[in-house]
Image 1 (cartoon, rainbow, N blue to C red):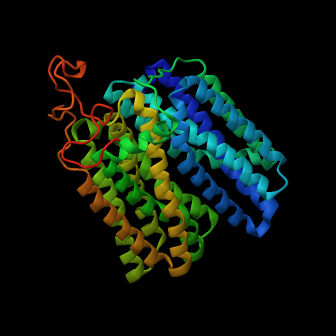
Image 2 (image 1 turned 120 degrees about the vertical axis):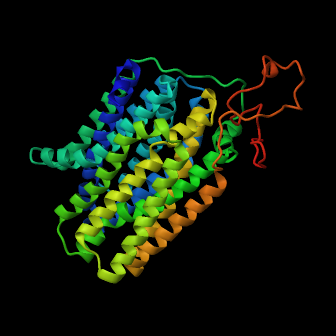
Image 3 (image 1 turned 90 degrees about the horizontal axis):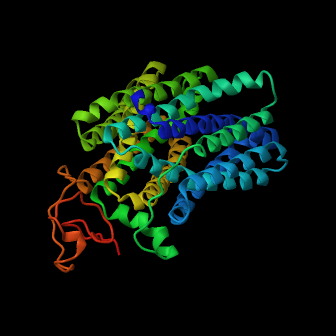
Length: 441
């Protein structure tokens, strides 16, 4: 897997991702302490509102940012957005009112809504070889999982030396370091084949996405993933502190088991995906997540929740989580022309976070209203239902090259020269998937 780091440009991009993630992790810890400092017992409400603002920014602004991404050099755009995030982070220590937190979080996440899809779309252009790209996806997943484990430890160590507001300085340094790494490389910036209006550019990624069967299936799998993983990410503290009456260390340990499961899958996937296609791997991951949630619900109902049962369940859910999430970049690359990749990655960013925007509050409300067992049942059944929808939307036979004709084109059109066999993606010449009604208008 590490062989992909021999590519200098990708190595700098990966290091930029790592240092930015570490900075973001420090901000997560510092933001919780800042919220408590300003709001006391209402800190949970402040953080919940900040999380909602983050998701709303992601869902609404990513397509708009993608519309401008094709007009701006990628490297310039990424560096500017990192600078915005660094500037916002350095302002957070001076916050004195809760509304100021909300305003700054919106600005930071608005920049992230533009940065993340553009960053992700650049990787397949840097790594045209599929095996290299698969290794890069697994490395990225490992980076996210390691950040969730190491950032709290780093923050705890720093807090023995400095006050919590100094952690925001570390966040700013992370974003500055990311920008400096990106500015040292040349990033390909494929240009569109023709000029388009702002509305066309804003909605193009969503229209391509929803006209592609495998991506509609991916969206349904994202719903499965978000429903079941929301149980882990939202309710672990309630399960461990409330149901099992254990301490904060146990919460960290249980969340670590979820991250460990995700890392195990990320390490195995490059080898697995050489012989097994994306669809069965991702379907297995979604099925594993749903089944584990339902089995834990039955265990809880019959025998009661226990720490070993929760740790094992979270580990298995982490395995499935990474099996669904990590290969998704391969699907997006297969399903788009290079010039459309920023738009298609932004569409995935928007739609997947829309799933989280539903799952986060649903999971929290179910847990507070009905308890762990009914919550696991509802989320597990919902995940299984979304998986069934994915199986219908994404046919098991999913070839790259599809025989098709162009009765609307003249026989001497350049696209028809030299035979007509090529990977099929939705674009200006292929507005509808063969046999489907959804179309790129």
